[in-house]
Image 1 (cartoon, rainbow, N blue to C red):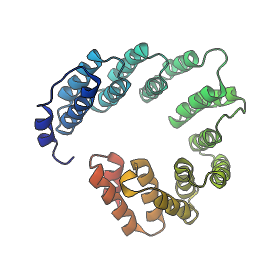
Image 2 (image 1 turned 120 degrees about the horizontal axis):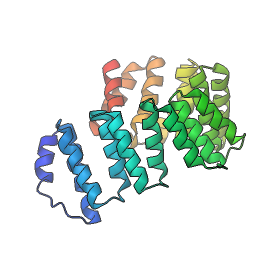
Image 3 (image 1 turned 90 degrees about the vertical axis):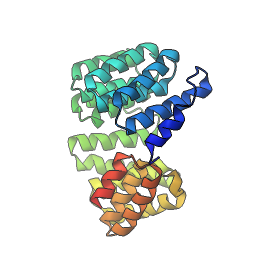
Image 4 (image 1 turned 120 degrees about the vertical axis):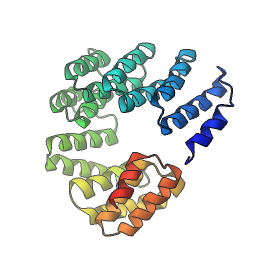
Length: 276
């Protein structure tokens, strides 16, 4: 992981066949080239893979992210639109395009896409998904529109809590944040080992409600449930924040550094390592 130049030399010896088994080396070559600071070559690797395998959704998504990061969001939007033409029903690509449109401040186009995806009688899950996507981008009016379209129908209690928390953050409304915390607390009692519930609950308590002591038991529960090599950057983000806020900066830094050994390029982990 720390020597992308060595990795690339080994990967270049691998054949670029079109079988499913050979797709992974292409993604590895892309990652090595990206880390070597060769964005155009990295993009070419994924572009060639997509030409051979247009059904490879992960390649489309990785290329969209790459264009947004290295070139321009407008180019990434155009690429995501092409991906959606290839995979019109894929929720991951739909979400990617919608998010990129919002990042590119193309609100009208994002609302038009949302209306197309929802249809005339959207399911509650679809309305909540659209509400969460808009609210996370702080597009409050369309977010509240889709929240209203859900009409109080919540197929997933966790999704309900998540949307309420995003609504509260977008509106800077502590009442809604506390409501989301209450919903997550109820879920935690029903699902004491749920990582998403514990993670979101700890974050809301520590960061949004400024109650780090109340968040600490949930982080300690996360630590007991997940092995260090299984930690995602999202979990480490919350855990480090809560440990630091409770005066346990040494523990927070040790956690971040251990995880960085496995994911040295992770931006969230590198940020925490620098701040702590």
